[in-house]
Image 1 (cartoon, rainbow, N blue to C red):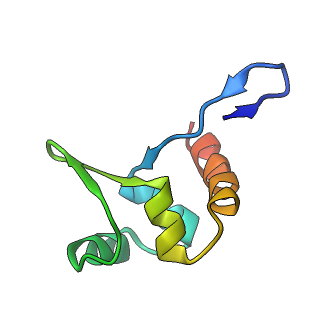
Image 2: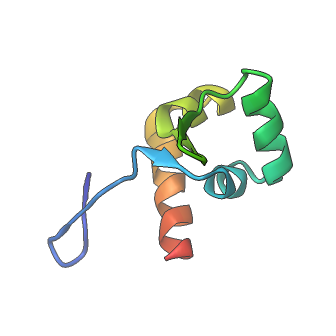
Length: 80
């Protein structure tokens, strides 16, 4: 969680959509789906929905989780 400019806490999502992962990784959704299907990117299936944990994105990108989290906040806020 991070503190917003007005003092409210912003919640960092624990899991992302395939589209959000693709934007964060600057790649296509098809590549993200392929990586999930090949078992190289962990994902959670919730009914028909696919969600990718933030920690899995950090592992997949080989980056520090805090750095990925900051990038993801930008992606999520841009989509809102």
